[in-house]
Image (cartoon, rainbow, N blue to C red; front, top):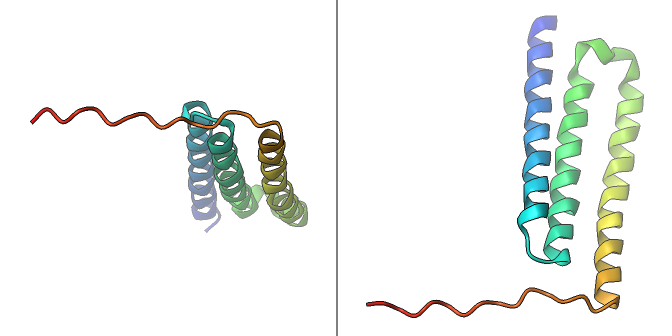
Length: 108
């Protein structure tokens, strides 16, 4: 049973790491600060929640369950607020947004 929980914990933590990786790729690939803040606010929050839940399932960390729950709570509260403050400051500073490109001409 302990070995199965260790494998389940490792799988959940790997899933969380992949979600964080996708959020980081979105941060690099998106064109403006508003899209990037959206990727960070959503993806990083979900990825860290899944990662910390995987750590909570780990049988080696049984005594630190309350600390992990506190970390989950504080990350859930602070990451979206930081993302919102970043976009609010960008909006107030009138940073440029994405200019939509024209569609290529139809070649048919």
